[in-house]
Length: 157
Ligand SMILES: Nc1ncnc2c1ncn2[C@@H]1O[C@H](COP(=O)(O)OP(=O)(O)O)[C@@H](O)[C@H]1O
Ligand SMILES: [Mg+2]
Image (cartoon, rainbow, N blue to C red):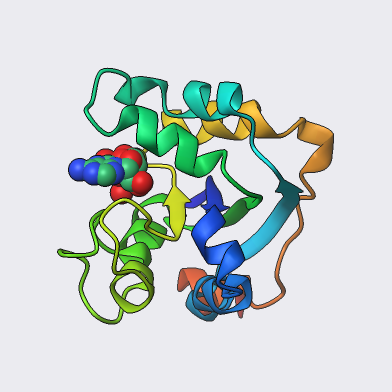
């Protein structure tokens, strides 16, 4: 099923100049970017985005990290992208993220973990609307889409 999700390349990844490598992983999988903005996320916006974590011991540090320096905030689309993009990212903490995943390959700090991805269709929609107006998202088809979704054979006769 085609879905969209909010993906943020967090400040540590921007500073370490690995934006391209993170995007490469998502494109390799067959996902496409439909919206992007370079943003220095304010503390207020970070607190809103992570509101469900309020009360956690790491919440203040998390919001200060996300608002410490610019991020690349994006909307991505693709088959089952919410679950599959989180598989690509790996576990939240560097100590648990497996090699081969984005976090497993690029992070060592428990509190700085390179990338954010929405965890459900509901959170994807609310997170997208927090950062994007609908007219800032450009919907388009990839011509190879039937090869990505496994439906090409259904279209040839
Ligand atoms: N135990 C922790 N220590 C430090 N930071 C954490 C911890 N748990 C979560 N975080 C931070 O909060 C963000 C949101 O947490 P969560 O939604 O659980 O993870 P994910 O980003 O994998 O969906 C994480 O990406 C990470 O930056
Ligand atoms: Mg989460």
